[in-house]
Amino acid sequence: MTVGFSFTSNAFQVTFTGTGFDGSTSNVDVYIDGEAQTIVSVSATQVVAKITSMLDMSTTDIKLYLQSGTPDGYSILSTGIAVTPHLISVTP
View: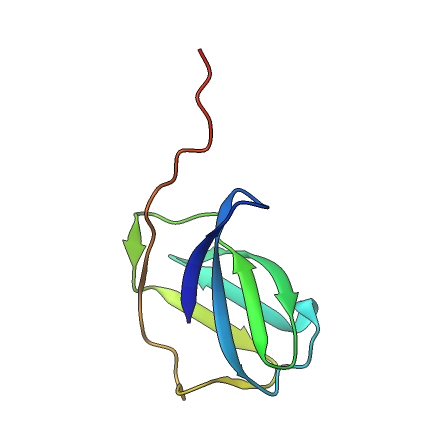
């Protein structure tokens, strides 16, 4: 699992890498701090979600629900993420 800032969408995205994902965004759910996140894309090897809501700048409350597939190296996902704010624009 990795987290990075997407300048295209002006948001942080979390990426899960694994095998056996079915490629359908309707079969994947990602929750951070109990809040549903926006699924950006799903392929056979990767799930990307836009982080739309977090309670704090770091969390360990991340849940990935799949119809099929397992992230590489994880039988159960139990890790955390931290994000660093980015200045997007300044207006007078």
